Length: 288
Image (tube, rainbow, N blue to C red; front, top):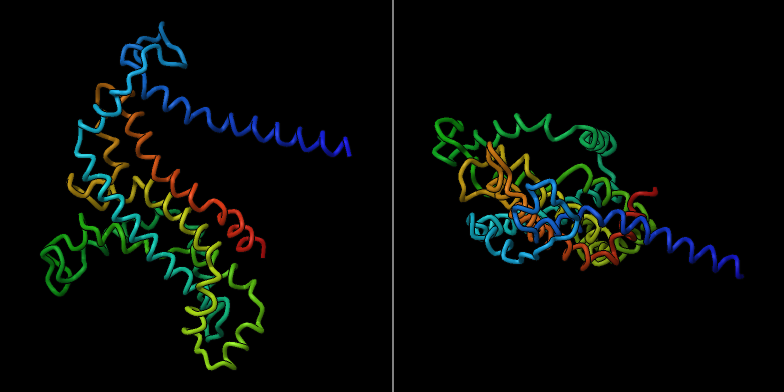
């Protein structure tokens, strides 16, 4: 009994130790945001802790660029993309897990291939598709003559509404339900569509939380895709907005770290709100 308690204490101590190591970059980011410029650029006076705590860096960083617009764009894109992906991915995962239709395994095989393809490979086809959407951005019915969905919310939201990893996680989650549940639903006269909304959706909180956190982090922190699909300041997201502190000559580290700290707060809030379901959802969807 004593040995087991010692082992438990040692395990917690080890976890706390590694957690502190993981937190060092975040602590360094906050401390850098609170430093004066001369503390950062003068190497002979470097210290991990700020000598003069400048909370004004956060206010000044927010005044350098129209951050209200950047945050608004990121909130709109992230919110709609996450809500949409929860429905489309879960419904597709439910279809692959609980319904039998011709070519089901063949289609799912191609979805798994999508997990192996990096987004940089598909960015050019996606760009051409967004530019050639008919009747948008000055395009004719053939998708020519204008910009299509480029530099609009459509280009940032629609491609993010579904994805291979989301469908895979949802399918694995729904495979864990007993077959008797579908049989009971059919006996009660429920169609597959009705069964999804009345039975499976209310029981999907763990996978919704897991997928919601993963999708929120991916969309909120995405830099490459908005960089390619947008070209005006009014459509910039927060990750593109962080580049205003970089120039060819120098980087304003105190402002960059201050803005980065503020940008990470929504992601932390989302994770803290849904962490109770996160581990449960990943375990139940990934071990089968």
